[in-house]
Length: 237
Image (cartoon, rainbow, N blue to C red):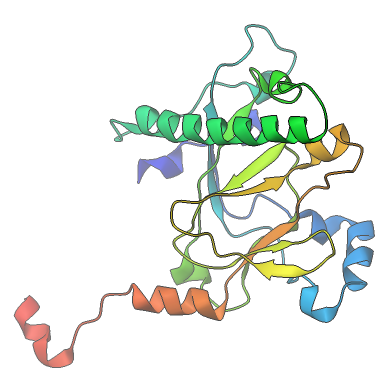
């Protein structure tokens, strides 16, 4: 795939491909967070990563950007991989649907806080929205317990998690309880980011999450493999 060649290091990996081994979860380097995690019940403690996340991510900017900006790295031109004729149309279509969902939730949140309906969506206008599909090599990193995305929160306003092909995403409730996520077909999971925590003075706290290979992940991987029955192998050649 040509997509692996489309890196944009100068844009701090905010557009294009971010290879595995680049993103470091805050739980690996934040001493205060590590102390807090040790106080959680054992069944709610996150998995401990051994280093940077072994996942790949592709960042696609969605929606209009401001005509002038002091933060060019947040508003860089998108990176389009070669060989995918409908790439831009597909990514923009998905991205616009995601933004529509986020805007609806942001309006409901504003009303719930007794604010004008556009209190949050007004701040989102021309923001550096990103569509960030993530993929992981389970053939290479498929051992149960492998941490693909270490325990962390997102810096943005709201995060949408789409339905994954494989299980392994866990979130933490406000009371500190760890819950493995199962997103129903046709649904999305929305988590609060650090920006809404700041905007609401902590009434909404940033949602913590991680992605770890589980026994269920291993089962799904095995179920999706192609097998060759020995006595029928000759028929394939």
